Every structure is written in structure tokens, then in C-alpha cells.
Image 1 (tube, rainbow, N blue to C red):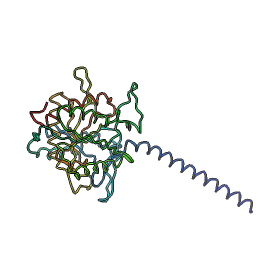
Image 2: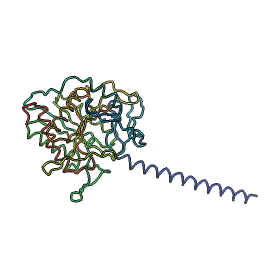
Image 3: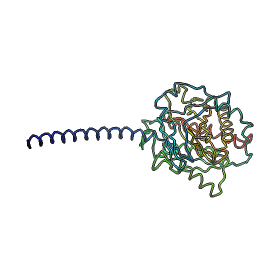
Length: 341
């Protein structure tokens, strides 16, 4: 009897060990899969800074039409902001895809109520701040000039990431008589999902020091979308220019998570509208419709704040760099008025 009982107990133990190993293997596999996506997928939100996933495009006559299929996409459903307590730091998950419109009818009404247009300061030498919440965003790999990735479509190498594009934009603006502060703080480390927390700290440090700017630009590159069939470039004079887009946040938050301090988004919208019109007047089709979303994007720090997307991850670096020239001209003309070059 004793031998029989020992034998059966051994079977049970063996089966239990095998079951545990299988469970551990499954958990590890899921973790590895999720971890690979998190590098590019997780984008910051927080009670003070949280970008939410709702948006539209330009004023009433320029709004994008809603596409019901977009809201049935299971990947899109992952990008809804998580409900959180006021002091918590929520995150949003998104795939490498472009911004999408949401709640178009409501925002159309809000945009139609905006009165007046952006008024330039008239300064001979306006002052611009350029910074990068997502400092490692990079572009398509070039086999002749490859870069080392920190994760997919991201690199610390300033010669290939969005900060390098910021350097080129700085040069172009300074050549047009604009004073530029290009902040090269790397806001992504240690975690992409809290980058907006750190970029807000950067902006706050300038405010605490009494620094004033006529425009604050958070320079990004967008993500390509399989649903977006629009061309990614505008070609003029044999030169390819990555398309641009202005993004404005209202600070409403989502799922009941609003912000106690909201941007004066209507004023920021006027600036984005003036830039968009100036860009398209100089090079038709270069700038996509303005995207308005319910996040805040740190735009409560200025009435002249705008997030500018320069191309997307399938554009080349050269195309993005080319786009800084017309962008600089448009900024100069908008800030200086008729005196701009």
C-alpha cells in the first residue's frame, strides 16, 4: 500500500510541475510580446498632462468626415484613456498609426464659435521655443545612412531623430531673423509613457525663470496610418517635402478626466490655423488639416503653443529636413506679419 501511495503522489507532483512550467512559459511569452509593443505603443498621459484620443480637423468648412470603421478597429479601442484618480499618471496605448478624428460634430460647433484671427506681435525679432516631448522619434531607415534604433522608429542619435529636425528648423528660423531657443532635453528616458510629465517640467522651468516666447513648438513626427491614403510628401521643383500637421489640445480629457487648468485652445487654434493657411499658400497641400484632440499636450503653458508633426515614420529624414524650410518661412510670416520674409 505504501508503495502504491508513493507512486500516485509522484504522478501528481510530476503533473503539477509540468502544469506550472506551461503556465510560466505562457506568461513569459505574453510578457515578451507586450514588452516589444510597449516601446512604441505607450504614450504619456497624466492628470495634468494626459493626451486623450479624440480629435477633429480645421474650422467648420475644413473638418474631416467621420469614418465609422475607425471606431470599430480593436487596436483603436486600446487607445482610450484609462479612468484614474486625480493624482495618478494614466497612460494610453496606441499602435504606430496616425491621429484619427473623433466627435466631429461637437468639435465643429466649438470651432465655429471661435471669433477673430491670429494677430502677430509685430516684433522685429520674435522669440520661439522649440522642444521635443518625444525626443527619439525617427524616420524610415535609409540603407545608405542607417541609424541604430533604441526601438522601432526611434533612436538616440540626434543626427537621425526629431531633435535633428529641430536643429535644422532652428537654423532656418535664425536665418529669417527669429530668435530661437532649441531645448535638447531628452524627455523620453526613463519611460516613454511619462515623457509629457518631464516636458512640462522643462516648460515650467522656463516660466519660473521669467522666460517669454512668442511661440512654443513641441516638434514631433507622426505615425503612418494604413487607413490614410493621402500622399506623404509634396513634390515641388524636384524636391520632396514631408507633409506637416498642427495638433491642438482642448484639455477636456476623456472619460470624465478633465484638467483643472485648461489651455486657451481657441487662441492656440488661431495660431495653428494661420500657420496651416500660410504653409498651403506657399506650397499647396503641404499641411494637413488641423487636428483638435481632448488632451492638453502642455499647451496650457502658452496662448501661442502648438504641436507640429513633421512627416511620419515612413517618411525619410531628408523629406522631413526639407519641410523645415517652408515651415520656417511660414512661422516668420505669421509671427512678424507682413514684415516677414
